[in-house]
Image 1 (cartoon, rainbow, N blue to C red):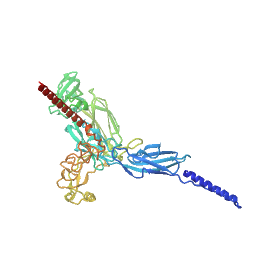
Image 2 (image 1 turned 180 degrees about the horizontal axis):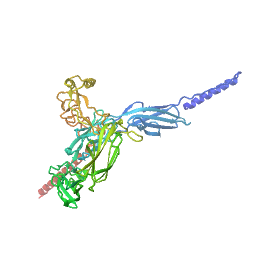
Image 3 (image 1 turned 45 degrees about the vertical axis):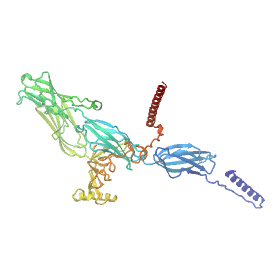
Image 4 (image 1 turned 120 degrees about the vertical axis):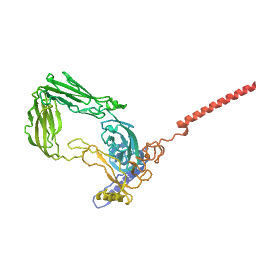
Length: 639
């Protein structure tokens, strides 16, 4: 008989007894009886509120042993991954004493039970799944990276850490290229890290740069990968200064035309270096030519009066040895480049000065806030029938040259944080004679807005005005703190800070040191919110080396881990092809994030199996030869 049936029978007997007593009594009254059922409970025997340890690479399978103090009609469970805030199993019907797969780290298991009357009871348990820490991985880094001279590099790669810990990234050697970010807090969800150039990619960087990307988890488990960054040389275009219109009067005091072409070329120098070729064409008639240094000189006479269009071209030299990838990567062949400019020459009897017939602003002296853009224009004309040029300058420094238009305009914004007296000038010229107008401006200062480093963007205003992107060189060798302070290399504040940090590490004066490094924000944000440390404490030793048991800097670079990496031999990793650092086999097991494959029986290993087959075949051949020889001997004996 079940427990519930026994309770019901006992209650019924008790009620019958009360009725009998009441019927037999001469007194009258009312008897009320309240029967309370025991509280419904669910018992979770497994899993418990504890930590379960698992090996790497195996399912996190646990027993689900539950029971209840009432008859359960339906069992259901719900599993939640507390670490990642996500559901592992929605409410699922199950039968007690089964197994289930948990998530790594913190789990909450909730058990639901319904009785035949539809009542639902639940109970929960929180438990933890732990596996040994694994080294992080560099999953995809191209072994060869190309970047063209004059361009910027941004090459992404992927990293992974099964332990989902913050990963420190660095590049070796430091200098021209860096890695961003320096720390990846969540390698699975953060933007991909990338390699970038920390200095402009100029001609001096052309060639191969061997780099090692290094990553490290909080437990000093590393991974490294190597790449070669190849800077491809390109043939840069020639830069030619603007050639402007010119008028020559044959009756003027200086009745001659003279113009020097000013050019620069990254590979071939300037007009005087003898590496550039000049060419001149002229319509309607070619009156003169251009020499090998880009100079034009001509004295006209009355037969030359008129207007001429002159086209000047300059050609550089092709690259001597273009890189094989120059077309695919840089979109050019490295052959020579030619640039041309056209200008007008007007020859008249007597040159007349151009004029400014209108201008804006009409007020020549005024005040203006620094952040409000100023707009200027002039209308010009030339009695000789040509269109003059307009030179715009700020405090006598040329900002813009306008050619070929009767109305020329110029805009300028001084920006925030600027104040003072300034002069904007427009000089209209035919090459010899000029007409000038100037505006005297008082700029009132406007406060610059506070730079706010924004978040992920989207919606509303604000956002990131400038994102810092720091590139740091290696640390200098460690210096003794007390000796450096004695010769004035440390301020009192710096000395106290280094002493405090050394004290926290129980380093005495003899080994308490510091080192410094240089860091540059390549984005030039002019803020230091996220600037890395440029001075820190270090363990001082007189002769740092790769065998001193100290992680330090020497030989122009820094060790990645103690006595390995940087100037020393590479550090052991799970990708170095060597069985080391407690690995069960080459690059697997132990600290590596993957388990070693099960060993095959000796005869099933391909190398062993093929060797045995070859040996067996050789033995069979030898045996057949022996049998053949024996048969021949017997045959001869019979004769």
